[in-house]
Length: 296
Image (cartoon, rainbow, N blue to C red; front, side):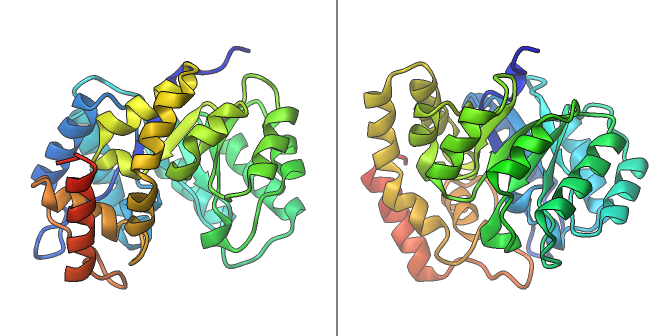
């Protein structure tokens, strides 16, 4: 099968805007959707880590998904976060979800339970069997504690409904091994904005990005420069984001990127507990970096 081109390039891991009462800020979400769409991103990712999915209720998730589908100006492909560490609960969620307008799901590696690699394989095979849309795996051991190793990823890639992976493990060696062993139609997506140019150079197909929330044009240009072989141009933009990307995670994600969006007057920087809004010091550093790099 050919590579599913819908998920090549930049998928933006959308934040969830909140108002001062900590309710969903739908006007802010509309401004965000307009910003990223006009900025040229290739698809939208709803309710992943950056969307604060652990503190968004199941009903809110359904409402956010429905709103995003309705307010998708260019009808971009939509990836919806459906994952967890309770396999049965994930399967129940799949049964209860209306997937009309959803092109794929992004499903995180089970966290906290610390399953074996065999348990991870069984978990994702059950999800892929049940899902009416294709599945993108999500490996993020910094949050889940458990790493999906290359053998596990290759095994899961053989399932006809598992079409790719978002890899945020930070190991270039594992990324190279996976790229060398999976079929050409298996979608390989960076989960680390700072490694996009490097990962594309060894056969990866794009990124699911945090930075693209606030800087969609710059990050889309970076990614497509790399994908089209213009690595000098990609590297120039990659270096511009190097310090900036580090700042985004100093007080956890999406605290930093929400502050950037507030500076750009898209939405407030409010987050839900146990996260806290960006400190004044972080806000100053981010604004200074944005000015220095010409992002505002």
